[in-house]
Length: 403
Image (cartoon, rainbow, N blue to C red; front, side):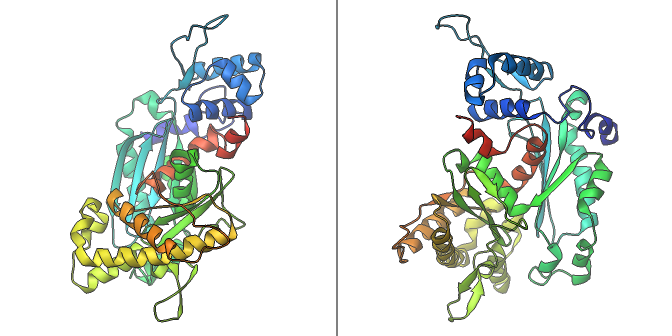
């Protein structure tokens, strides 16, 4: 089934159809419509700086390609009634694959970023061959709910995964020789070969930050520092409405940030504000770990161990927040993670309390906000990669276009 789609979507230089890579002006129009929900031709011309005639030609082309839908004519003004246009949810689909150290997720989204279907898998540790199999069979399962025409509209697969997975073998108690298989394994090309779909890869925490930028707090904040608490903590940096990835793509890799331990010795944030520390504490007490990955809504049954972990996590994250804001004058710190919303709320409230205890003279007390996307941020961020690669513009452009 997937093999039959290849000729329709993998050649970005193909003819004038909805599957080719759109040029800049078409991307600008689509991005403006996506950001505002719906826009009439005159509004797009004003916000984009394009002529009304150019906008008309572009909108007719996008409507013909099945990417835009016409709304009801809006009357009441002088001249012809304006017709708002909006994205067709079924115009494009995309698949996101999150690879974590304990679990993997696949998600199918439409052109609006709405989840259509998802599949999850848990494991003791990730191996490339198993995840290729999960990706291939899972994507076939996700595609079953689409019509033949809709399958041709899958833009690609965005993979969200930690870099250098093999370097964490000891901490997650995985066999070193099996984790070393990741060193020479080109997951991107292997998955593309198995599915005949274009594949893009991004760091998992950066993907989560991108999802928060596009679908969460990014609509209200210009600059923010982002923390995502997964098996290991990571994050991202947003500057001027755009994810800043840095020279090597590791900007916002907060795990190695130096933190002073309770014994006065230097340690790292990853050792104090990661879910794996909670996992170790639960294992020491003989507690079932399955709620952490299989049924995350059951976290509240973890009792005092959970309470202590939240307190410790908040204390160290408060230092990380203030340290970050002392370097860049962020509007806020945004905290999210692979846990239920009520746990996120407790962590954020605890961080705010701990921040209030620190000396913030010279920078002011930075606001700490809950993320809006949740535990699926990494998969959603991955799924958005093919959409931006082929159809949309970077978020920063939208705010510069008189949006």
